[in-house]
Amino acid sequence: MKKDEKEVSFEENIKKLETIVKELESGEILLDDAINKYNEALKLAKACDEKLKNATTSINKIMNEDGSLSEFKVEE
Image (tube, rainbow, N blue to C red; front, side, top):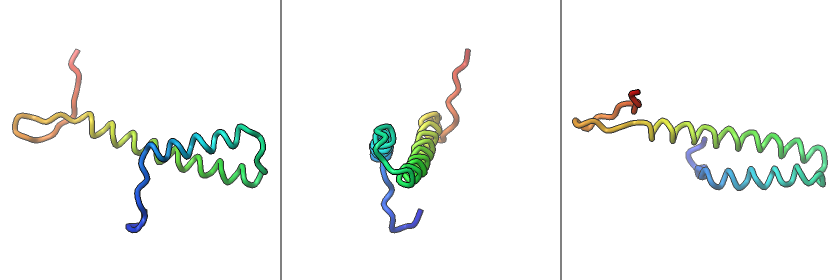
């Protein structure tokens, strides 16, 4: 991502993705436009997936008594 580009939030990407899906499902879109929308949807889905993975990684850390972070593991 370029420095001058604003990072789009997860929620904004989801809204765009939902809009594209509705357009594609309507069947009232030209083939070339549908292909472009499909490719855009793939990019949005990938961006959302990356943000979710980053959030999961961040959330799964626990702060130790010394202030350091470590992976949170559930002991059975």
